[in-house]
Image (cartoon, rainbow, N blue to C red; front, side, top):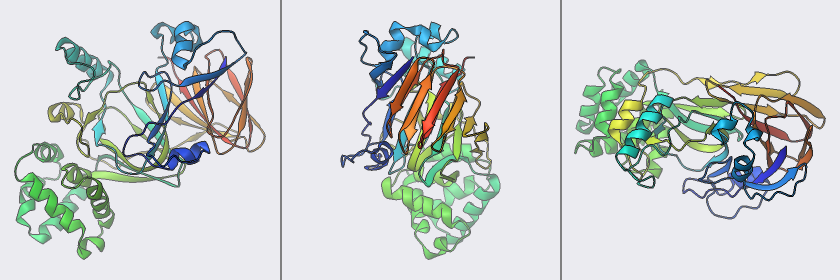
Length: 400
């Protein structure tokens, strides 16, 4: 079965006023549009527009279709009764929160503990909304997509501390003394998020340094630029200094990142295609007015210090590339360039059209999709034909 889908963008304050509209080929509304969700997640389930082949059944969402026909997910995934992935268009005009996601075991334990404690699902202090992990891929579709990803190598931390030391500002002494051993990023994070009286003056002093001409001419100029940019949106937030200790990555169009469990990350700006498991489990560490649970954050975080690793596409031959990660999903980009491309599928999928209209065809029939159009492809489809001049993103749920 092919099922055409649609949804309404979510209007989080950090969203772009033009990014999603441009992707969809629609007129901007003038309001922030942050994410468009394609899946069965109850937070914003995709609407069902039309099915191929045509049927008399009336279901208004993809979630209702799958509830009525779990066999659409295939034998391995049908017992769960729900699509385990969520595809998004994400458009950031300002930074998202610093955040981390749990492992499968951490998610199960955390969810069970909060359920047993009677913490309501809508309680702002709740960390675990479901018992699932939330690994995610993001691939840039704008010419640049900026993110923070993991803690930077110790030698770079040492450079930062040396440069701050040259100012001899007393407000930064606690942080400089702590990071005289540049591997103590865990202790630095604990202190920055502690709310201690000395934190605010330290943040202020570091932002002030970032605004100096010395910082602009420094070998670390890009780091100080990041500090300035984030401080503009979150003045006084300790997360500004946490961000200083992280890798900044500026993805070019088509480049991607994988955020596994335990990796501290934040998306800063740009439009990307994001694929994740269908979970709401986010533990935050700054750059947000939302709840920050420092102890839980500390328990989930990996404090490994290394350069960020890009997720490079693997050519599948012909007109497609695939983004693979250590996660139960894959993301494929197909560019038939006005002709027809054949793509093998390994499970139920969500497809999303970029740039121009496309026609998709399976044994069930064919479906013409406009720019920004999307559809669900059921698990019985072994091969999907894609024809036209646009680009097709295919998010596939993998068994096991």
